[in-house]
Image (cartoon, rainbow, N blue to C red; front, side):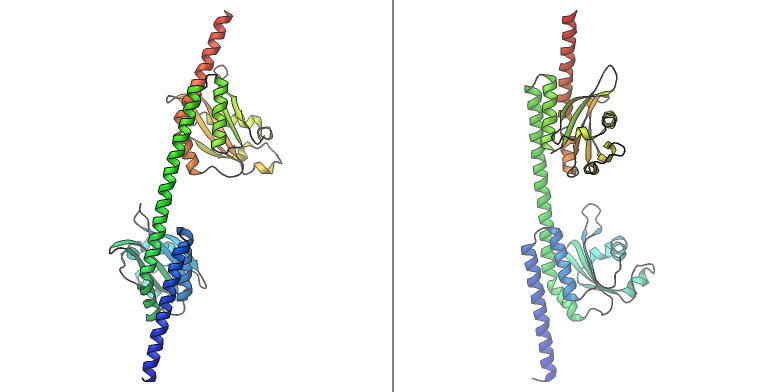
Length: 358
């Protein structure tokens, strides 16, 4: 065997070792990091290291818009901060139509678009992510500013392409399952809350006790530090505090005038609102713990126009999540109904007492 043949054999063997190493590494990531975000971050980090890339971006097709959106990024050395946004914005179709590993040069992209945020010496290797034979899911883009990608580099990416596809698809399926499980749990939480409110409405007849039970239930369910029910007085047309659950003893720290102003404002809302708790602080207050307070305002409406009051829930530890706001909206009719029933019973008792007096 000649020296030339021996060198070729050693080169081929070195490439096979690189291929085997990257395949094993991707499989390890897929087995140990099932959640999409850490998995995607680990994959692009691995590819950037193996390919000595200055940048690496993962783009996935958005199922709503159909365009490519960036899901993970890594940049080393010479950076191109606007490149990923430009790729997603102007070359999304090109990115999602590729059928094999492809190289784009900076000169080529600048010829197509002289305003492209890219240096002429940059080379980009694009690895399409395809499920089955024709469903384009996205692409991974690697960039090198100094050294062009070699035939061995491109072969390495071709060899790793199936593992990359499999890992990304696994991450997407994990996310879909997580969202589906989350939706099921949210529906279960909705049903549980609705049933609890209905139980209070059906079993508690005394208005003040019913209202207190409602605010206690909501404070417990949403881990609120403070839950207040205000009803509008028919005499003054102003809100009055009717029920309270103050597990953190925080009401006394707040500006009472401002609290009533917020309750009055909440009673005029058409939908649940999330407000910053800084609106609740007294002028010049030194209670720094309340700077991050979050407040949810829930208007109490009978029918479509008859406003009866509002619920206010506050929490200092963290903000109310989108799921929690969704849960409150789902239960809003039951909350309104229970409060209105208690309100009607209060009016009935008041009327009965007036008759007895006469």
